[in-house]
Image (tube, rainbow, N blue to C red; front, side, top):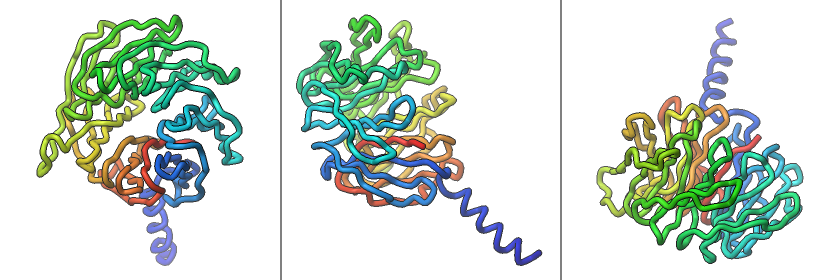
Length: 322
């Protein structure tokens, strides 16, 4: 019996330490023109998928069988069959698609076209652009409310976030934020909109209904000058209690209490994290670190970084699938 205890307990502890089994992590490498495929259970690189030029934004289809990949220099979105791990189609977009979201109806993509100052609406089944919305200069970040009513788009040079009615495709409001907004995220209940500002190193929070600003998060990292702390990607926990914000050249990911807007802790990850994604069980966070060519696995139960894994040159976007 003693032998069984000695063998089994370490195995259990090892299983608890790693990401959930059966999950697969997908990371866009914008300098390699690939998507890295990572086994979440073993935290190892299992494959790479060749895609178009300068892949950045990633999103899964509603059934999680397809990965959509925005090709900034290819002016398109590649459609990747995850079972085959190869491109099976392409969707048209405007010039330089940076980031995009899949609408909750599963039928449309809303795409930020940086060079055209537009949001393009793409019908997935028809593989055609069915509408466009004029927004500010250099649109990048995109988010869709859980009920599908609103789409948010950030414009870097205009220092604005734009609210779009997803049904009528009308521009509902333009909200000023701090300099060079990068990402946007709605709270799970849809009542709040969070917008990161890279140059100011802040996140501004708005009431979605009234569009009033309700708060702001200012990030500081000891030993790093303010201009080196740049807020970019945002990921919300499923229960809405926590937001995770990548802090770019500060090489940190911040964990923020969404109720108090206080920064609970900072995680030291690789160089220049761009975007982050949560595992399905919400126990692990993965950051894509653009300058160090790796991803970091963060154990949120034990508040520690478990591992850094090289994935390619210029990792930018990250999503977690089955």
